[in-house]
Each structure stands twice: as C-alpha cells, then as structure tokens.
Length: 482
Image (tube, rainbow, N blue to C red; front, side, top):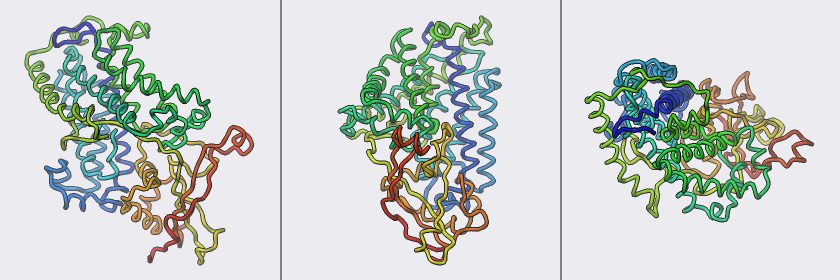
C-alpha cells in the first residue's frame, strides 16, 4: 500500500469492503436476534434474561438491559441495530465526516454487546465475540473524507492473525488426527452443521483430505505472518486466507465465522493489488471526498489513543497464543475486545444426533405412533439434503449438536421439551416441521442416533443423504404432568 505514517491512500476499496461487510454481518446477527432471542432468552424463554440479571451485576456483564429488560425493549434494540447496519451497508454514514460512521459502528457494538452479555449459553460462540471486536475496530476506519488510518488496518491484520494462527495452534496441540493428516476424513461428516456440499466433500479421495489438512496448516500457521509484509505479498497472503475461508463456506455452516473472516482479510489487500486481480473495478478518483485528503489532527489523535489502548489489551491474547494451556474463543475483558480464537482442536469421529419425538398414543410403548420434530439446520430426515443457512446463526440447532457430544448444560433443553408438550408457539417457531399441527402430543421422548453420510451407491439407490442407526434413548417418554 502507498502509506504515509498514518494515512493509507491505497486502501480505499479495502475500507469499503471492511465497513460494508462487517455491517452486513451485524445486520444478519440482529435479524437472528429478532427471530430467536424472545423464545430462547426472553421473559418466557428457556433461560430468561430477567432471572440472569438478578444473579449478575453490570460490572460483570455490561448490558443496557441491566437498566430494564422486556421483550419489547429487546426488539427495539435489535430492529434499531438492523436499521443502523443497513445504512452502513449502503454507505450513507460514510458520506459524512469520520465521526459519523464511527458513531454508527459504536452503536452496533454497544447494542450487540448488550445482547451477547445476557445471552448466556445461546451467545457463547466465538463468532459473537469476533463480530463485537471487529465492529469496534472498524468504527475507526473513518469516512470518505479521510484516508483509512494505517494503525486501524494493522490492528485488523492482527485480528486476522489471532483468528487464523490461534486456530492453527489449537489444532497442532489438539487431536492426533491433525498431525497424522486424517482430520478431514471425518470433519465434513461430523461437523456441527453440514451444508449442501458437505456430502460431496466427504466423498473426496483420501489423498484430497490429506491435502486439505496440509493446506489448513499452511494457511493458519504460516500465511498469517505475511499479512504484515510489504505489498503485494500481504495481498497474496490475504488472498490465500480468503480462498481457504471460501472452501469452508462451501462445505459447511459456521454461522458468520467464515464470512466475516473473508471481510476482515481485506485489511491486508491494497487497491493496486485488487485492481490487478479485478481490473474492472472503478478508480477511486482524486477528490478529497474519496479519502485522498489528509486526516485532521483530532481524528489522528483519537485513532492513536484507541489503538494504543487496544495494543495494551493485546498482551494477554499474545501470551495465550504461545501458551501450552492456550484458551480457545476466550474474552479477557467484559467488552469482548482483543480476544482469543480457535476451533476444532479435535475432530469428532462419529456423528450422534438427538431426535425429539412425540406421540398421541395412550401407551408410549406403542412404537407406531411416534413422530419426529424437524429442525431447520441439524440433520434429521435422512432424505433431506443438508441445507445452507450460514451466515445466519441457528442457535438451538448448534446447542443440540453440543448436547449430543455429552455437554451437561441441560436446563434449557428440559424446558424446551416442556414447551413442546405445551404446544408453545414461540418454541415451535424455531422448528422447520411440527408433526403435531392440531395440538401438542401426549408424550415426548429423545432418542440418540448414529448418522453417517451415504456412499455413492447408497445415494443413487435410495436418494438418501444419511444412514442412521438408533443407539438408545436419552430421555424416556414423559408427559406434561411429569
């Protein structure tokens, strides 16, 4: 990039991608909140926020809902965040002075922080924290009146470095399958939420899966160091990270994790490199409103003060990267700034699924009456092709995957089964298919099944994507009175 000590005049296109892309992810996150939060965490939710707030103080988990919580206020915050995010996606705040997009992004960060900090297990995902950190940093990229600040772009590169290198170190320190290059022989089949092309990826030959693992190690452990190299090396490194993330987007559903990583990698991409790869992109022009002017003193001092604070917060995450007891997806402060990331230190070898079933029969021992509830994302009907729903986040489906692995946090699950027996409309709205449209069942149970992808021959003969085998019963038949 053509950089002065502070102004990056060759990063105007990158700033557009960063600001609009992060705002688009915020939009998805707030829409997901509108659709799911009341049923999961609302006043009558599975883990009600009011009960949580009675146990936790503001300084432990900052949120505007400590002032007052209601489902109506939650929807006001979420719809307000959606509106602000939409204006940033179309680029309206970026047309003003640099403080306007800054305020807009800080509003998104504060609003979503308030949601995540009261979301308990339903918002305890690494990509929630990643979005908060990214939104805070991108707030200081300025508007079209000023060039993108070099310190902010470098800190975004540091964020991508922690995200990729942290994940790579977790794998090297984790299961043997990452060291003997067999991890991807299982991952596509056992990952939390397979997508439409996961079956095809799983059916690749063994040598291709080994190439996947080697490529993962190279991109996560080696390539991130080059994000800080001179151009065009930094742009090439970012391009390799983007390609690896696109493969993950095609072969799985990890909410917005991979999507926002693609966006953030543009912090290392220069406009010159981008136009060399995509020559049809428009020129930025030479007007000051296109960011080619110099930054005012007040803006320079503000950005330097913020980045200095972020550098201080980076000490613990930096130590964590090289610690033998490396933390994964951890926040070192209550505001989710400068965090530790990582995923899949070990790969599950066998896929187990929990199937919720109900029956109207007077005798629950009558196996002919049991009917299965269908979820939006997680595998159920073997004939149903795994859907594509990322970057949207299906929180209930994700937690059911963890529950099938043996996670013991089951209070919310017990309440969910009770809501299904009650025919609760909010609980049923989280499903793809309700097998009891005329009223709730008399009995409900949870069975455990082993799932595996069909072979090519099985797929052609049956049309099924999965073969499943019943392993047992997790929750014996229960009625509402029980």
